[in-house]
Length: 108
Image 1: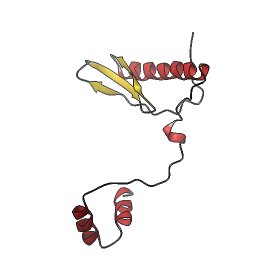
Image 2: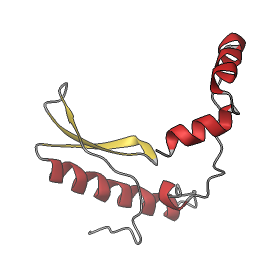
Image 3: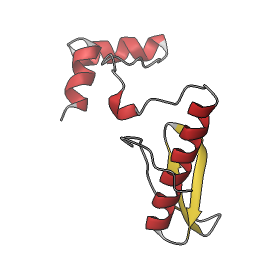
């Protein structure tokens, strides 16, 4: 049975796995899944098919299917925790709010 996933907007990547001696294709939204193949294209095709099959199984059992990261609304906020002394040093060095400094550095 051929399984396809409508609007497949999931986040895939393909890496070489030295340990396995093959290319591995993981999916960010399904961290427990991956696919090994001798070729990068095979790893990508394999993980996409596997994700589609798992999504169909989840839907069939009434479970929630992860929403693609690309379509999730994000707040635009993230928190970085540093020791208080580091926070003070950074604030004094920055001369502006750390939020403004981080935003400026990240958007370059």
